[in-house]
Length: 113
Length: 110
Image 1 (cartoon, rainbow over the protein chains, first blue to last red):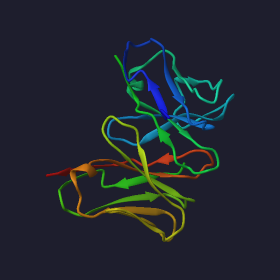
Image 2: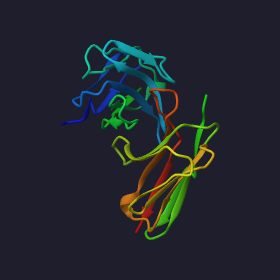
Image 3: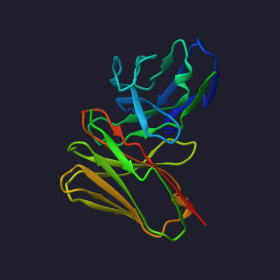
Image 4: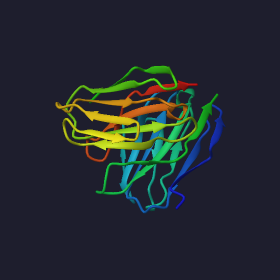
């Protein structure tokens, strides 16, 4: 199993550009999450999904969108990138009703200039 | 909104020393997790504590859940450079979501 994979690993965007951060998991987990982490800080939840076709907002959803068309994939879309979105983005998944353990991907480091 | 604060924010110690980091919540929670994050990687789960007063050990790491279920601590005995990383607590309230603490950045030097 590859676990949770994220692409790209690094990206530089100009203000106003858009991009999609890709996330995939091969563990057949129902729950998936997107977080952002600013330097030296904890993680803040952007969006999450409890299954294909179902998504919900987290703590900091403004400026982002998600979709969940399959169990495996959970892309995060940034529209009109702003410097405040410079951060490291982590995707995670969790097995339903087994435990609260979340499995994290390696992250995408995004810089908006 | 439930707040989860960790202290200290930064800790730099010598190899062989002992240390304790703390996690405190503004309200009671059902269970709590501790994660460790190494530079350039995602967090990895260390332990989940669910019972007030519970103590769990993982080699040189000892985790304690407060009796009142509002706090937790992580104690490391004889720290090693491999313990260096960001330690995050996360509470498991609110159904499907985790709320992460602010983190303790630990550096263990030779």
